[in-house]
Every structure is written in structure tokens, then in C-alpha cells.
Image (tube, rainbow, N blue to C red; front, side):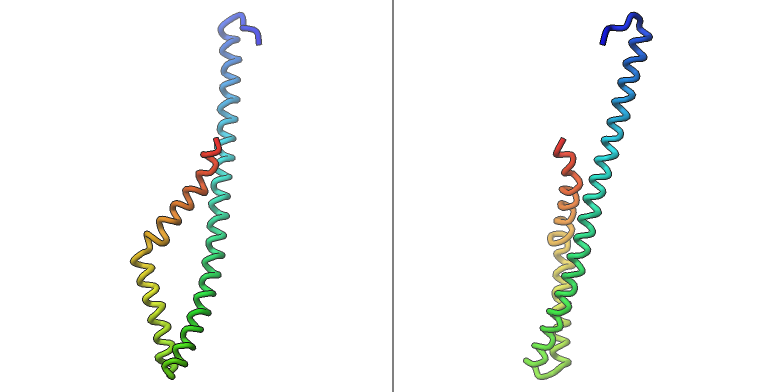
Length: 121
């Protein structure tokens, strides 16, 4: 591109180039945001499905434990109460260790998922 003869032509050419640059950069930022949000929503969807499947597994394991304890103690009340006590103990442990077992790993997973695009630049 030849050097313009006067300063106003130079300014017009450069301002158009700068405007195109910022518009392109804005489009890139929007696309990166869409990618990060879509990755995060996909991760949340997968976590919800895994959580539902784990609930079903726990439900059937709890029923199996209750019936096993029923046979062991020869009492339905003791069997199902024992299974409920085991789940209560599990719940208390989850509440006490929620940051270590759930909160911190999920935060790290969300950050890693959404920041993958930034590490590719």
C-alpha cells in the first residue's frame, strides 16, 4: 500500500483498519464466550445425568442393604432403620467434607472447562 499524500487520507485508511480490527476482535471474544458457555452447559448436563444415575444406584443399594439387615436381625424395623442410619451417617460425612469432596473439585472442573479456550491462544 503506497504512503498517502496527505495526513487526512492516512488517518482515514488507518481508522478503517483499526475499526475492522476491533470488530474482528469483538467477534472473536463473542465466539470464545459462546464456546466457554456451551462447554460449561454440557458439563452441567453430564453432571446432572451422572447425579441421577448415582441416586438410582444408591436407592437400590439402600434397599439391598435394608433387606440384608432385615434378614440378619430378623426384623424389618431394625433392617430398614439400620439402612437409614447408614445413609444418615453418609449424609453427615458429605456435609462435613463437602468442600473437599464436592465444592473444590467442581470449581476446579468448571474453571478448567471454561478456560480451555484461553490456553489454546
